[in-house]
Amino acid sequence: MRYIVDHLPPGTTIKRQLLIANRTGEARRIDVYPAAAAVEGSEFKFGEGRAANELTSWITLDTSAVEVKAWGEARVLATITVPPPASRGERYGVIWASATSAPREGGEVTQIHRVGVRMYLDIGPGGEPVSDFSIGELRPARSPEGVPTVTAQVTNTGGRAIDLTGTVALTDGPADSRAGPFPVVQGVTLPPGGSGQVIARLPAELPNGPWKIEVNLESGLVKRSITAQIEFPDPGHVGKQGSVISRMASVWTVGAAIAGLLLLAGLAVLVRRSRRSPRPPTGAPRERIPAGR
Image (cartoon, rainbow, N blue to C red; front, top):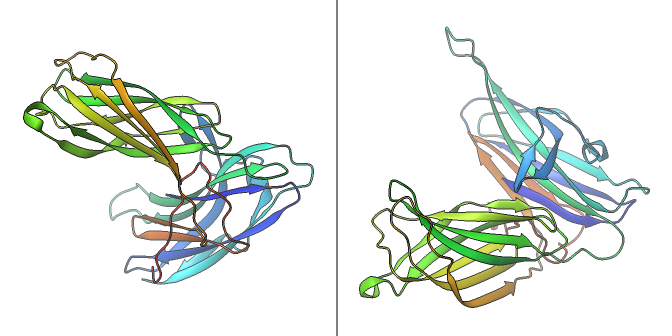
């Protein structure tokens, strides 16, 4: 899943073009519609079905459905109009592209495949709020089955919602061993001021240590790293908090247009900016789309 991320003053109108690509050998009818979403309990949560909220009332699509040939493409234009009296704050939503499969012979189950573009819109006058986060306590543990994990406490210290992903790498272990990097398998979405945990699971055969651990987390263009000394406990226990060695921070900027690409179950949706070059970094992930993609 990818994102529409922007800071908009009240009274602003923007347009985004969605390219819907059918990656299957059959023609498909694709329904396209906006729906509500929220950031709750360290998660970006989608509303049921076509649930509406304030943001969805600002969105109009030039069509509600497209017929896409096998291996074909179709375009849908989304217009987002922020009313002049709109209050300051973030709004969340999603634009879904949905395909329904006919039940198999002798069956009564209908399959619905959806891919969506998350929307993080910050409303208010002036410039875009700064995005930032901090990494706090690191805690090693082992499950009763012996699988080691590392949990990092994170706090959103900026003014935009953030989606955190990252990696964990181990060095200076027993006999100067190394391991990783391993991906963070449980990330979080945090509203401004929110706190949560990210978790990395490591191979069960990993010795207890001690280890030097480097945790690299990012949300879009904002990156934070922490290095600490840890030691894993025996199975079924939680270890001592890691002893911090160093912390690093970086923010990357880009000067080219941003696009989003989604792919699921043979269906793809591409969102392109049509108004202006992107603003400074925001909390939700963004990425370049290479030429020819």
